[in-house]
Image 1 (spheres, rainbow, N blue to C red):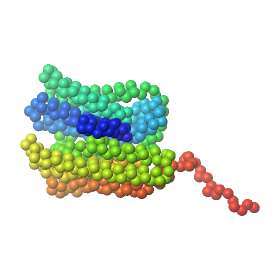
Image 2: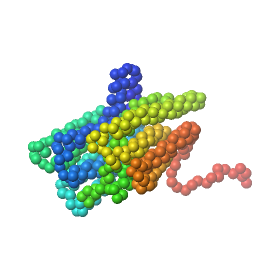
Image 3: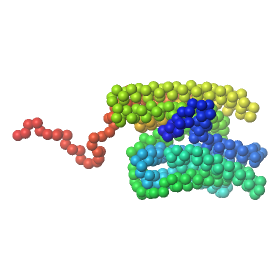
Image 4: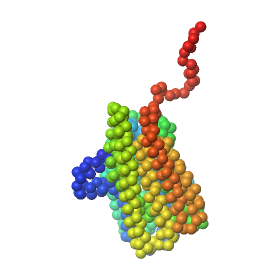
Length: 481
């Protein structure tokens, strides 16, 4: 991700108000613009097509279908993305661009296979046990696979630093979604919810097609070295579990509440808890700007210190290495503090704005009672994720895995306990898990600061590792007969 910092340094380097606005806009564009485009498209469809006027059961079926598509598409893509990103970064560094297409095809096969493994049994349950029309089930499944393709192809374009085109592809896809839904409802007189679902599926498919076409245009040579890609999953298995457990931890507290007596079952297939899920969405929106702040400030400034330290390690004196290391960790601490301070101000402002304004739009009762605790949890959670990124910088995969495991396990256990508490404390599971993960990542970073020399200079091997009979430990006989 260092390329983002380089680009932002060029923008902010002029130190003018205009460039500051451009820099913040660029950070927003590459961080959260695609998500807001999807939200805007769904919202506009609901307004323009009269979504609120149709039956309650039909509306809930559509809402649950879209919810499941997004959650499980993210979960399916998460185990592979981190390792594939590592492999692609390595081959780009080595300028072996012909190895990128094998990486793309292997990852695509694994991701789609996992999507089929999860999606097909659920679709069969929908059709046979839920009684949902086959056409609706098929379109929902196509939307699920299309969104998986979108998330997967985004990985390669992000590594190629083509963030602008990602946002443009999302814009074109969601614009097509909106226009198609209007044609299906007002011209062809199709059912509203089915038209919205098929339009959303078509929009995702268009976005994925544009992304994949651009990737194949960038990289046309294929070395055929597929085994090397698979070997990375064995070598960097910690990345697989770290990314998956972090993503699963984002939703495991929702899954816990889906098993309680407060859950709602739709068509004998979808399970949700509307109040808790809505409060979760609002809490995420309250703290979503942390991604922009992290991109615009933390990574931009830290990258320069990290680069200086790396150059000192390659050819500097010991004193230069120590000075660069100290400056790097001081910058890390300062930018983490800035992230927390700025995001805290934004979160407080948005929190009170939501508390005051949302009840006027029908958001009240249990949703607003659950919301405060979850907002605090996501504030800690996004700070924890910034610490995980810094652990990735230092190639500390063990520390990142410990953070993800502690976050997921404590969120799961804490949510089970919190489900038996009053409504205002329902979000304590996420608060507990995020705080535990943040604590682990913080102390791991402090440990790295003290042991960075060992971590950097003593992690290699003088002899190539392999399998076979261990050589005799005796080198020579001191006294020979």
